[in-house]
Length: 605
Image (cartoon, rainbow, N blue to C red; front, side):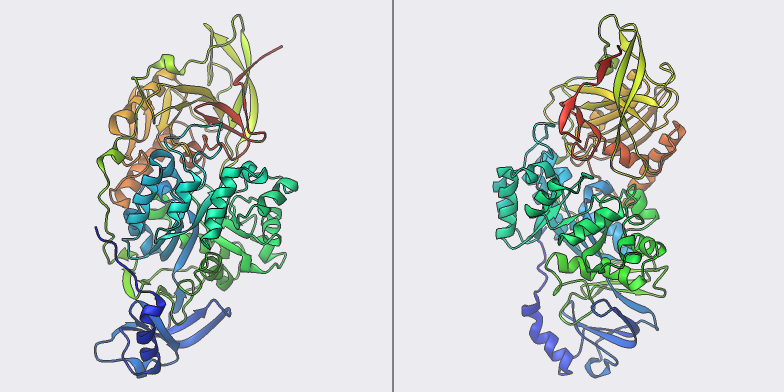
């Protein structure tokens, strides 16, 4: 499908000037609204917005002078007119949806601009996958800007990906029309130690005049943090406390604070603004990861802005953090982020600035949603067949593939165990003493540690047949069950968690059969299945259908004893070997505090 070219400001300047001067009629006028000006932090009643060629020509008390007989009138009826919302850092793949279906899901929530890092598909399909995401993004009726992924693998030497991203790939992508920068630089030790490959990617981005995304997941704010900032990343979304936000802003970074499906990092950091009184220009709201259920049932950036307000933030300041602050950070202040002349006409009408009901959404001058329903099409790309065949196990798995053998003669072992932390990306490094029966380590009720179960990382890119086994705690699973997913950030092998080895084999084989997704088994029966056939990460089915299956999946997890909030997100990140403390990869158990592999078992003395 041919991509549409949205005219630039210089291309439309003659029309904008003519309308603003009253020499020509506007295409559309939004009449009689309250103008929320995010440049000056003012709320100004009695204004009209005149639009031509998809851009704002003027915002004036009365646009009658540039209204013609064919001008479309949108009656604001005294409602607030606010800029379309921007998500500064996100991964479309985490929604389990293609760009088209993701756009369809979030447009009714008022999101008109997204800054996406498709590093999930980059790990599976390489540069080709990034290009496919980029191309479908450019077809949409809203603004989806792409950041070229920087780290595939995220931690070289500690994981194996389906494809790798090189500095040459980054340099090529910087020439594509929809690329606005480099995706999150997750290899923070590499930057801090001046790794030539990481610095080459950063240089290619900076030489193109584009923004370098950051990802500093360490709590250490000493020399390593200083070295990371010196390397060039311009923002960071991995902060979890007020001190993190302050440190980043003081060093000239933008502190991106996130509310995703499972990451609740706004409340603990926004106090830098609400209580410490720091300048809010360098704080930005984002989601990072939202699955389809959250998008359909709870919202997107509107949910984040409401939450920031509930945490004590002034509503207009919260809106700045989701509009103009984001646009300025990416060098797009003259394109998006405010309701001012020349900008893309991305406008929301809402009757309340605190509860933020999204009543009308205008994108590029076109009404795209009303009262929670989308009113436009979101075009799909034709994905190649090989993008739908990415799960290669090498052989059918059995319970033998998930056995963890104990040292000969041992009756008990001490295990290093990944500890899940509710509502946060970091895990804890735990240790448990587990019993040995018939030479195999036992978990769950058989071990006396009911909340310890097995976790496995199954290689799925090159059909090696490799399975890495370890232990995890915190899900609360009970009975004979297993959950498997081909979404396993960031290498996206297959991750399997269970209390029974036979169930783990059933779940893994089921995902190989359907070409990827998420499944939950209990007592030999499949309780839920979310098919994600595109790269094992996404579905091109409607968001409502995927959300319904995702909801059934979460209910199945609960039926198996898991009561964590959005536990699926924790499940999918257990292989992310750049966030402390413990993770699993296809190469073993990784201690992210030291970026070293450690043994799963330690003999009890």
